[in-house]
Amino acid sequence: MNQDANNHDDQDKATTEEDLASAFVRDSEVVEEAEEEGRKIRRRGIYLLPNLFTTSALFSGFFAVVAALNGSFGAASIAIFIAMVLDGLDGRVARMTNTQSAFGAEYDSLADMISFGMAPSLVAFTWILQDVGKTGWVVAFLYVACAALRLARFNVQIGSVDKKWFIGLPSPSAAALVAASVWTFHNFDAEAFGFKILMLLVVGAAGVLMVSNIRYYSFKDIDLKGPVPFVVLLAIVLGFVVISIEPSVMLLLLFGTYVASGPVLALMRKLRRSTR
Image (cartoon, rainbow, N blue to C red; front, side, top):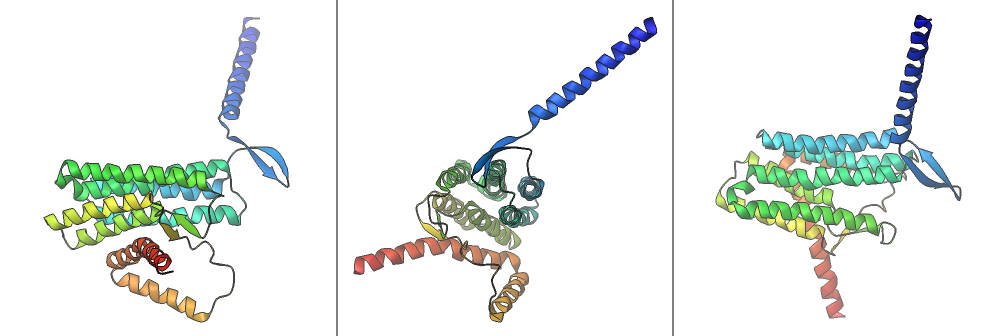
């Protein structure tokens, strides 16, 4: 009798543990409302493929901070560029596979804050801005705060602005400018006081441009699926060849030109309106 009672108690205990485990899995699932074919549905779980790219981008941003703390500033800068590539892929993969979700959008925004907000600021601060004293960490924080504001504004403006343009400098481009500057100047051992002031200006300007109302071309109206002339492919190949010669310098020139294009075009539009 006692043995049967013990077996019964063990079965009840196992059943209770299974129920608790099932309840935990059920309660921890992501449930969101989506609209398909004009009707709202409740969807459980998350899409794996696009979130894998987002997680990889997040890891690259975290690795950049760790590498900078260990003094590997070249590796830290490269990690930020890798995060930039992965961040560009997750959205495209989600659209191509029809796996967009509200969870993915929020997760991507949080990952961007680490990879393009915290990481570039800490890499620049660890390398040279800390030598400037209080001004260095104030400018580094300014960049982080502007990145957060930029991402928040972008999230609330989705669907209400022209997709052809970004309002303010995109955070990945700002991060690329800072990372390319650190990579280039560190390779040339440029640690004189003048370069410290230059990095202050680069980091501060990148932060301010992110929260500005200056328009930047988004390249979203380019049709990647349609046919293009052969010369376009040739130009892309030549671009890769040129960048491979001196990656840090070429990437700095590339993203420096893009960052400068916003204020230059805005000034040209203002002068054109004044002339009229």
